[in-house]
Amino acid sequence: MKTDIEIAKTVKMRPITEIAAKLGIDVGDLELYGKYKAKIPLTYMSNTPRFNKPKLVLVSAISPTPAGEGKTTVSIGLSQALNLINKQSTVVLREPSLGPVFGVKGGATGGGYSQVLPMEDINLHFTGDFSAIEKAHNLLAALIDNNIQSKNRSLNIDPRTVSWKRVMDMNDRSLRKIVVGLGGTTSGVPRETGFDITAASEIMAILCLSDSIKDLRKRLGNIFIGYTLDKKPVYARDLQANGAMTVLLKDAIKPNLVQTIEGTPALIHGGPFANIAQGTNAVIATKTAMALSEYTITEAGFGFDLGAEKFLDIKCRLAGLSPNAVVLVATVRALKYHGGMPLKELKQPNIEALKKGFANLQKHIENIRLFHLAPIVAINRFESDTQEEIDFILQFCESMGVAASSIDVWAKGGSGATELAEIVVDKAATCCSDFKPLYELNDSVEHKIAIIAGKIYGAVAVDYTPKAKADLRRIYDLGLGNLAVCIAKTQKSLSDNPELLGRPKDFIITVREIEIAAGAGFLIPITGDIMRMPGLPEEPASERVDIDENGNITGLF
Image (spheres, rainbow, N blue to C red):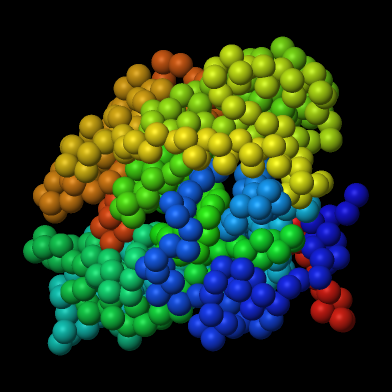
């Protein structure tokens, strides 16, 4: 069986100008990055839509498992399938982070015959967006330390209150906690700080929620840094940092145009993680695709309880978007895992474990309906699945009144999901379009957290540590209680305990602290053991990656 990169190498890519033509983009407007990549000007986002009533389809999934669900692969395969049934479709995805690429997951450009290309470029430096975000973030960090050191222009920042760390796009646990300013008086003021991974930067969240250069600059200025020695809040605008930061991001804010294996247009833009940020591509990319396409297929990170909830409550509310359909990806082996079957045995047929795992699928279906949206279940088929197991899932979905389809987009590309595409077209056309976020922004912070924890996760209560209670007081004192909430939680469970699989009952969510992302426009209640700087595994994926003397890359998955 060929690997993803081996399959990608067999494809003769179309010039990106040809892909742009499919979307009605003037070739002269493209900012070319070689033959197969280009950036699109922001003006296309606000153009009159090329199609009457363009449709937005969200792809989400059940709670992730070590067995993998293939949400990105399904998103790409579905977009290809829509084009096969003569519906003009564009897939809109996030950019991969180098941390996971070289860490546990490997590449993140789909798989098999449902990939976005050029996969090596996208998985590596791509068009430099992550680098620009990293530089803008670290510029602010340098300006903060420079001001603390300054004698004549000091804002009297209290170093103990500075919450802004530095970032890099790599998994490096050794940098989680560091001390800067060592080496004497000319080297700065010593203080504790650390590094986060670039995808966890508030700059990443801001870029993906901005709808213009002006909006981007304003949001960057709203970044909360800490307090002065006399307890006054300090924001990035107080350091006059947001102008230069915006300059560094002037190209990164533009969506990136590439293609799938079958020549379907693809926009890849931004990459916030879903367990600590909103977990979805840029507003600008989504709106641009909707202006140019009949169907826009997009995905939100991890399970519906994380990425999709944030997509709906944060991104859609902000951008005025309303999905026409939600595809929920499930697999036989993931459901068996949630049913208590050991990871090593998942390839063995087990109807009883599959049945027990339905509780997780059922909860996510219920969650989709909370937003007044109709779920469609896509059973992403793997080689070890039996027809009996597939039929069992289809029967369960039928019993819940949910449309479902078994798909095989890894091996067959778009042709492996044409039935799903037909269902999506039907459901999108009949969508009631009364989507509504779960909470109002002027609700109390505690109420917003309780709504998500109770209705989406299934918690019976929310507990706050003394640190979280102090954070709440600070938030209200700053007048930031009307921001959205973006709960940081493990992706492995509906609860905040990664060991509780399936559909946990009678659990309490514990908020241990609440971070402020005023520039992004949300608060981050942190539950469980969530880290912003992952570490490399015992056997990093980077050990498989190599290049020969002819420039041929191997080992990216």
